[in-house]
Length: 70
Image (cartoon, rainbow, N blue to C red):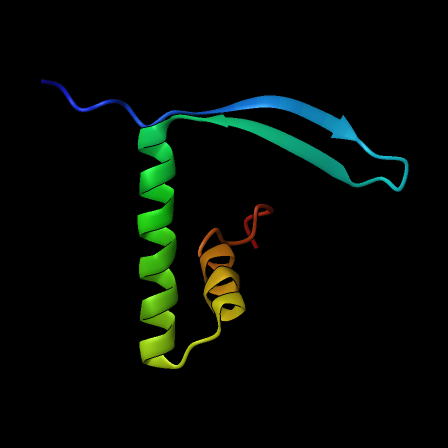
């Protein structure tokens, strides 16, 4: 039997009065399980290495480089 695809679908986007945006997602059971597994793995790795999660997110964004090409 084939594995169920992990699907994440944007179900709604609402712009709030304060300018923020609220997103709603439809997430398949397979995607939910993968998100939980990867999230827990990231937390455990960070805890073991003594690295703050925000530092990891900042590093990931820094890998995108400068969109202006500088």
